[in-house]
Length: 169
Image (tube, rainbow, N blue to C red; front, side, top):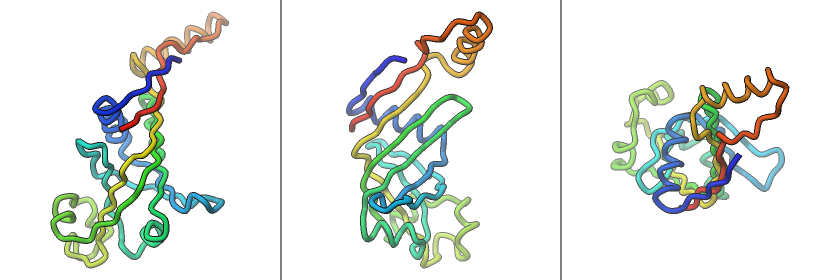
């Protein structure tokens, strides 16, 4: 496994690629309290500045917890492609019409009776402060073949097709 630390536009590109590939993350709040509160959340988008956007109910526990402490941890996992991403950042809650209009997804209607006009709709933006990723250089198939070959021959893999590192915006 090699290490490749990324910064600026390369970091944003990697965060966008891995988060949008996985789509679902474990969204953790109250990071000082154990056990950490965690729930699955569906990503709406990762913008060109590396911010991650989510639709949330304004009366949800997560929103109350963010209002008390904006620090959050996100864990994305795409097992199908051996891609993993951990993001620590600051969350901001938006209730304004223009942000809701911009970030709304018709799929979110399942959670909100009146769709995007529901007074409980809020948008959460997470601005990454620290990120770490694990990925494969050659893709899932090559990685799997390397592991199978090592298992069949009795050798150990050097995991040379893997890459990990910090992604700092």
